[in-house]
Image 1 (cartoon, rainbow, N blue to C red):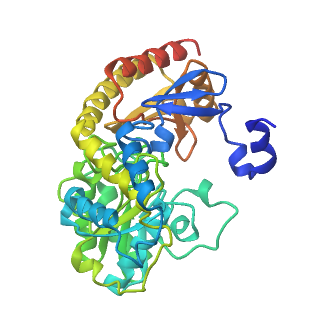
Image 2 (cartoon, rainbow, N blue to C red):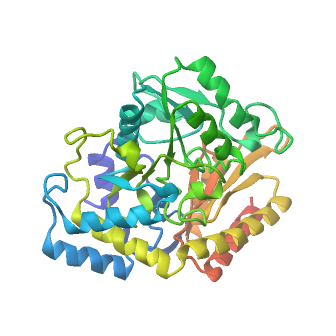
Length: 425
């Protein structure tokens, strides 16, 4: 039985129905190789995971060496050297002077733990999140996810309040930046006053809303938001699961926003370039709210994943992948905006670094979402050997999120191929 048939017969249809018709057998750098021998330029990075590229030899070597020494013993029962080393390393790279880390297996688990810590640290119980935001698929993280498509056929959900997303292309307040005075951020005061019981533990938000469609807030947004919640006595949890580890042209996405001081940062995806690992890192005074036994993850802090993460951080720094993401991303954004002028189908181009979204619309005046066209473009690009993602609440945003090591020639291939494909629509 071939792989596609196994998927059809033995995997839940939520997986099998959305799978691309490519059987991947190997990968290296920015290239995926299929069972039929075809190769593809991966511009989605396994949903923004392999920031250092597929199968980076240095990361593989670190994981292999650790595997020969220790695979598992639970880092919350015993002291494991590589776990301590990674925790110390994170304290040196996570913004805001955050110090204490907890390791888990995924972004959803990291966000669950961060919310629990925020509630214990503040003695409060409510959480505020953003519409269009996405934080995971557990009941707790779906409760703070502002995307109806992700919530269908589930629940009941935990109480949460939602603020308008900083979605300038489709401003929920009907305003235009910058004359709006960043009213979406200022409206957070009214969210706290009118939608909550005055018992808010934290605001949880992504610096760029990835699954929401690469929604990129104005530069003032999170400085205002953090101040409002800190003045209220609440914490600011920054979900860096998709934006962390160089993706946006900064080591962490929140570094693009002046005055946006996080109290807890959650991370996964790019932390170990493909090895399963999640974490949240908190201010020391906040972390003191959790006592021994309050929280646990059996496989959290797996030594192999931690060794891979340490090597991954070293690769990102030494190969200057953050700088490359900023440079190549700026060039790509310029090329996509040039293409936007020629192609009515592209309604908006946005993003930072190598986290870029092209929102497709059938009509620029009405901004009717072009979801079918987005899916068709993804399929045609795949046939031409370029893999991209499709996302957004309307399913109409092409997601360009390649490994951070992508070259100028490969970026040129992406834009040239996309322009050619669009010219034939």
